[in-house]
Image (cartoon, rainbow, N blue to C red; front, side):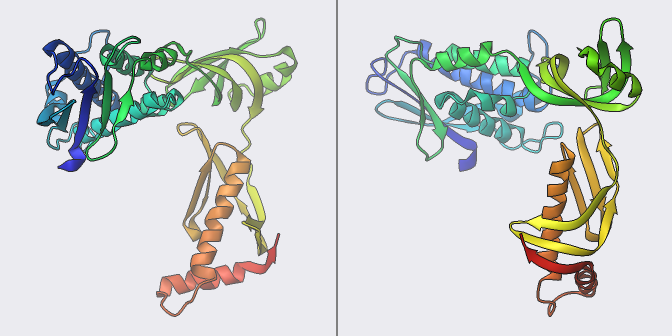
Length: 349
């Protein structure tokens, strides 16, 4: 049960010989529970509303219980509810507890950029941060709050921690990124276009420079890639492209491969491979498959895709083509022989 436990410690002048006011204690414990609930709802992608009603199954799986209190400064060992599956999440309570400690770590170390990965939905991210702010010590307070995993050093949230929370709350939701989709709308008089973005099943709009007009017109109803400053919506999804830096076509021509370059080693192939490339709009990545070797590679651009394929091919070569065949199965021996026939020469780059 230790992995379900964590500690909450309050020290400073307001704590005398283990005594603490109900007002301060209640604010901290209620706040910690509320934050855990929000993290669980974020994991479940629970439909956001201005006033969230916590579902009963989330309450049951994420409730926190007092296990023991230590003397001296007020230190409480808490335990998340027993394992329950909610939705697609096998152990919602444990997942929320672990994510809670990740958020504490980010706030303590002022690495708030990582919060976007921990809590992708910006509405829940703000909810979580505001709930933290409600029970963290303010500047001028004479007490500190420590939170950490069971039997591990606590992470101390000292007065001033709200500055980190404030900076994370007011940070605009803009990212520089590539958006790929089918060019479905075009307004030549305003230099505007609309891309159908399959992951969120919506059309994203942007303006383009006039010198790109010929390219835009010739690619109507084709899949293109737009790179620029992107405004995100409250679910962390692209909503609008504000500053377009580049627009490119999606190149899905076959990838011709005659050499495999990895870590200073070059495998020269007897016959060059010509492998089909696809673009997965849902995953927003280029995909290359080579079933004969069990290789499926995916990357955001063709250069990265080539490198991914080389890494995978080289691994297969090391495991089968360049390995001892004494203990290999019949299928592995066939693969080993095929690889040796494919590789004509091994060079050092």
